[in-house]
Image (cartoon, rainbow, N blue to C red; front, side, top):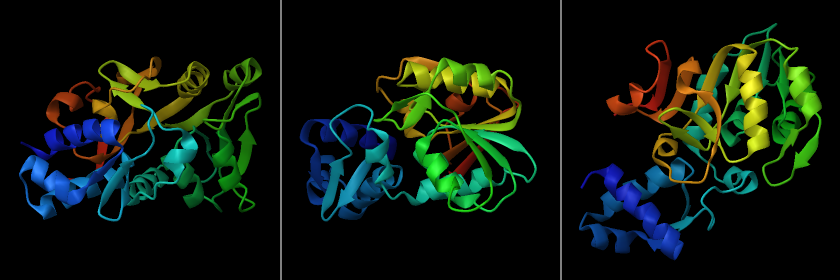
Amino acid sequence: MTQEERLYEIKQLLNQKHHLVTRDLASYFNVSFDTARRDIIRLTTTGQAIRVHGGLISVNHDDVPNFLTRNKIDSPLKIKMAEKAKRFVHPNQCDFIGPSTTLKKLCELINGIDVQIVTNSIDNTLELMRSNLPQVRLLGGKVDKEHRFNYSVTALELLKRMSFNTAFIGTSNVKSDGIYLTKMSDAELIRVAASRAKQVIVIAEKHKFDSQNTSPYMTISLDQVDVLITDVSLPQEIKKQFSPKTQIIPILKK
């Protein structure tokens, strides 16, 4: 059994039991303790579970954990992905940054850079207020408290009159035809922002390509993605779903 197959089964077990012990996993899969520990590290560093003494626990009991829950997970890989995304932020440009725990970390990294940032994310805005630069425009509207973003028809109309150098967007699920989110209002706003950008950069860990969670609302098609930043190298069958022009950047290479 490959690690990917074990990780899938571990996630299924977590959905049932919500707490798993490292030694029990080693026995269940007939692998060494070190192998089971590496599986746990892989799941926890990508934000799919929370590591505790002796094992791991589920993020929560839902298919898609909310922003506040995900934000509590200290993932070194998310930081590395944000650092990679920072390379695409340049002075004197105007960028859109959507809601995402990884993109929140990007906002932490770009404090002090002379750029204009437009966002519908409350947490992005709070991070960007820590210094005089960048300039920040928070789109107005009704606040989704669970996912911590704003939405309004007025914001959509404003976006249609704007032009961005780069749109940075996250996702809860990547399917064979596009980038998907759990909330229709969020997806609608992100779709418009991406259509107004010269370059679209998507942040997506590999587990979001395999996810079976409920994310019914597509933001953009895969051929609209200019740059994909992910945690590990993707198999060839996934890469082929993107345009040949899409730059795929894994943080870890197998």
